[in-house]
Length: 305
Ligand SMILES: Cc1cc2nc3c(=O)[nH]c(=O)nc-3n(C[C@H](O)[C@H](O)[C@H](O)COP(=O)(O)O)c2cc1C
Image (cartoon, rainbow, N blue to C red; front, side, top):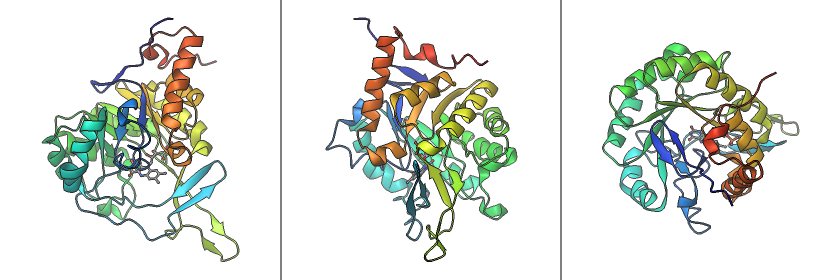
């Protein structure tokens, strides 16, 4: 049988395979260690870290929707220092590539978190710019080229760690935001974060989420995510990591044809904790059937009409 090569390099970091657990659905891996060795995954993007511990938003903060879910968890996390002292050592022992996902209300917050993580052996930083810009009334940093550029530049100035900037889909032209991050020193782009959505319970007349609105994820968002990954991959020179609704190996392969070097799996893990492993197995099967030796051969190889 032909020997397959599933390794991919993103932002100069080598992953044993292109399947990464997405931030926010995998915690710090602690709930999965009894199910399988974490090093079967290509990498793990940890729950979003803030400077200080956060308890997150008031429930209800998750709701099922057709082919997806809404969440407004609100970045519940133990704070960056607890992560560094407690979670990271275990993760580095158990897993492959460990990505710290970071979030802040101000560029200075992001920079301080990045600075503390720079002293550790975390492999990569993923800068989530979907957080509220407290200086500008709560809209996300990632919805303007200026905001995206400022956060990227401020973090870049304090760290040599590989930097992946994670984009929100809640914008008019995602390629402009991606280019702004690239121009300020991002080594890679990941997308998409959740799409802003809402549901109302017609018996109570209340929105199903306590925060009224929340982020939509899961299979429902896949075509939107694929379109955005394709657009961004065509607009930047740096590596792109695709996510949003990936639920099968076929979805992951599509995402790579669109231009992703690697993929992240989020909501699919909530309904099936073994989803990432099934996706890795399915990618191997696709490679065998189609006589693809290196998975990197398919990245960006869609043939548009
Ligand atoms: C419950 C939940 C929590 C999340 N928390 C974070 C987070 O802390 N940081 C982040 O960048 N993205 C977070 N996300 C977004 C996911 O990482 C991912 O970008 C999004 O859900 C789309 O992928 P999916 O459809 O495969 O879930 C969260 C998503 C969910 C469902």
